[in-house]
Amino acid sequence: MERVQYSFKRYEKKFLLTPEQYRAILPVLKEKLAEDGYGVHTVCNLYFDTDNFDLIRRSVEKPPYKEKFRLRSYGVPEQDSIVFAEIKKKFNGVVYKRRVDAPPQAIYAFVQDGQRLHQDPQIQREIQWFLQMYQPEPKVFIGYERLAMNGLEDPALRVTFDWNIRWRSDRLDLCEGDAGEPVLSGKQIVMEVKTPSAIPLWLVSLLSEYQIYSTGFSKYGTCYQQYIAPIIFGKRKVHYA
Image 1 (cartoon, one colour):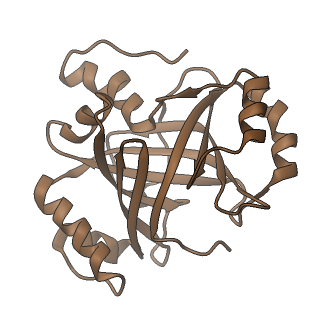
Image 2 (cartoon, rainbow, N blue to C red):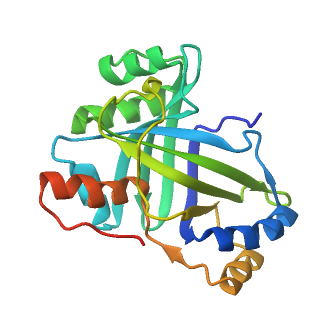
């Protein structure tokens, strides 16, 4: 099983792939990368926001600095499962993530009532400061299937593939299952390259060969723009066909 990491600083680039592109590059990637300890698994996320969705509204405007908060589990959590509480920040292209973990009941007590966990007190203070400042509440569940791979020569290089991305705005509890409505049309796959430095040249060449280009795609941002904003603000949908 993978060693749990609680603090990240890295660059993250996203790409939208067709199934054909995914099948074409996967054998090449497997020469340089190995699947992580989870294999293909379901990722469940519960995004928190203000009543007016201020955090995601600011994020989709692509400012130099943006931040979000979510709960995340790998699979639908049970009573003794681990759930992460995460702050994710992006400043001038660099992504910073800080998180703590605990079983669902303890995580909810930490987020809702400020009950302390037996983990890094500094990260707990950062999360509590964020929660006190924004007073966010659960707004959107987003789940998907993921295949994650790490570099054989460079373990800090991480590549993930996400598909069957789905969302819901009710039953806002990770323990309520992973069902939801599709976020993307078609069978697109989201590829994400995560690295503390530049993307290696061999990977740049591979992506260029198959005409795979980076995009500003965001799961929560796309869900907000396509489904939430048109209802509450009357904004036009943004399509990723």
